[in-house]
Length: 216
View 1 (cartoon, rainbow, N blue to C red):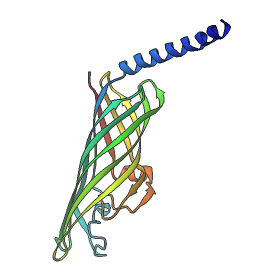
View 2: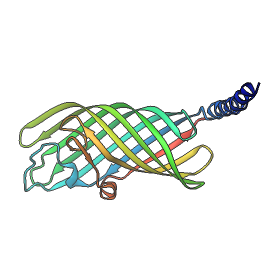
View 3: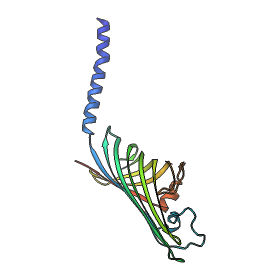
View 4: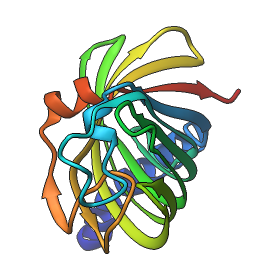
């Protein structure tokens, strides 16, 4: 009798805990849509389509742009899983020779997002790990037409600062590729293998932001 009572005393709290978690999970079974985008005119960082550009290259009319729409599903209150697509574009010209270069990058992948620190109710930090498959196509005329394409895999860790604007809308500053790994070169970021970014320097050279909408 005593053993049965002991088992009941242990079992009842466990059942209540599991029911509470089930209710919380059901309440947090929400979807969010996110659009991440980056944009820069940092010319000297863009002109790297060709691995060995001319030393006297004077870059002008340069632009680099990337946007990544994503969808996330809430597994638990602060843990989200989802998928994303992406498109990146670069374009520049050489003032001295009038040579031009451009590239397009397409990607598809998945991500795991975790909201890990609430600073105040309206501001919190998140981390995101993910992986994607990329296809890069690039062209350069220096002096003859130069074309190249590459398929590669990328894994990454991002950190973001989120600002809740309303019940459904959030905006974030995103520090891209705090840690990263690339399977091959050339790639959109002109990096090799495993490494870490210079967080603030890279952000100022290629700022990245996101807008999040929570579906009702």
